[in-house]
Length: 368
Image (cartoon, rainbow, N blue to C red; front, side, top):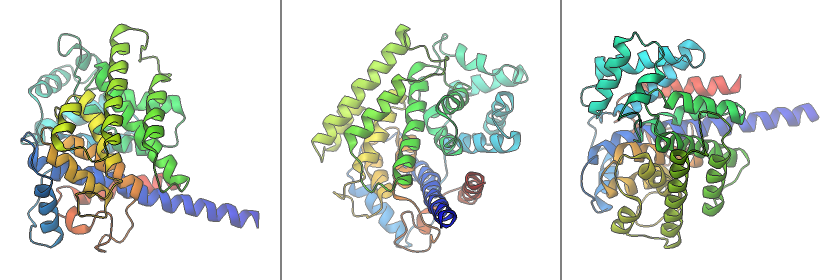
């Protein structure tokens, strides 16, 4: 009897993980591809992205939507981890650079990325961490690219202990981003993915925003990996800034249905990690509420909100939709219109087949 109960519990966890993994991976993809449509543009009425998604679901819109550098680098992370059977910094740096030089056009890379990858290439990718650390007069990049590309990494690393989880997230991030704001942003996004999984695994159907946010900050305050220097002024300032931004998220959540201009004023719309990571967390939590957005799907609600805010919509939506998708889960039958992320949404996304294949790999790896 005990063996049967253990087997049943194991199967239940496996099924929950399957849905969670699909939700995270597919949510991240639609956030990037659909968010790209309004990336860098002014805010719009939430009816604009909602109507666009409704037309897609009705089959009126079918053209392919390209992903950005965020998805490209996320796929590079998974590809390198799979081939190298773990993190190999030189190989991962090469993966990033080759993707950029071979297929970086129109992926919304920054000019600084070209400088970084060229420097790595000229040094044959030896000791790749030194290059990002020297960028921006030694301050490193504070943008959100690190936070977005750790989304699938967090799924890959779910079974690691806390210290090993932190090491992997930080060491992948600092190949391209070393500023404390960027490192902390990546850790917060990874911790959020892990916390969502913990809730799904325990069967929680609801979320207490205050507890969720407090847990993230507590976890960040207790990072063990020694690359983080919490007593130094730069790291302390970055932590305090995130704590202050989380307070703004709480303010917006307390107001329940904050208008677009209030969200923008409180959280900004730039690609800085200090703005976009709290913004993504806010969109995720707000997607729990059916308000204004005519969808039962949490990731679609999160997507509509982020797209309406304008500015850095692709990467912010990718992070938010990954969390919403993981929390609600995506079942295996994508053709069902009641699916959290229906196939008509997914099949418009460039790279869906590749993302699905890596999702299947993450699922099989977890179940081994």
